[in-house]
Amino acid sequence: MKKKYWLLAIFLASSLVFASNLGFGIMVGEPTGFTFRSGRFPVVGISWSFSEKINLHVDYWVHNAHLKNNVNWYIGAGGKIFITTADDDDNNFGMGMRIPLGLQFYPVKNLELFAEIAPGVNIIPKTQASFAAGIGLRFYFN
Image 1 (cartoon, one colour):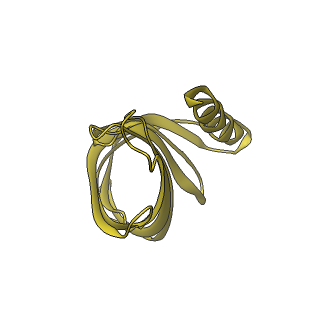
Image 2: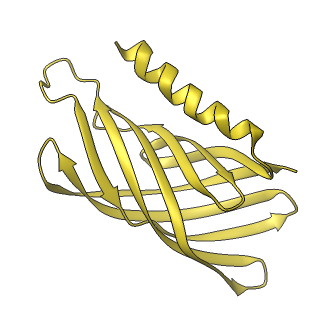
């Protein structure tokens, strides 16, 4: 069953290959995984969590503005789905919402370093607060 979820995640991520200005990278924190971005297309993350969850989140940045020199900041809204991989958990599927807030730094052309926090709320299987945070980098293929 886990193979089906990984195949779905890989399919969704590979569909971004056909988009222009594709950014691909990694994020480290809670959760840890891969991140994809393409122009105005929403940011996609596929990751795993220390709490034995596989996550897929999609964020749309409502505001992405220049802060100073080659530093930007952003805030957005997004959704997430997660699958618990623990064998003793009967509720292995969940959904929620998140509000990403972050800083981006562009030290050289085609390289983005970022830091992000994303408070949110899980809705399914039960309503509870959630929090994600991490740092990462994306390399852009023009």
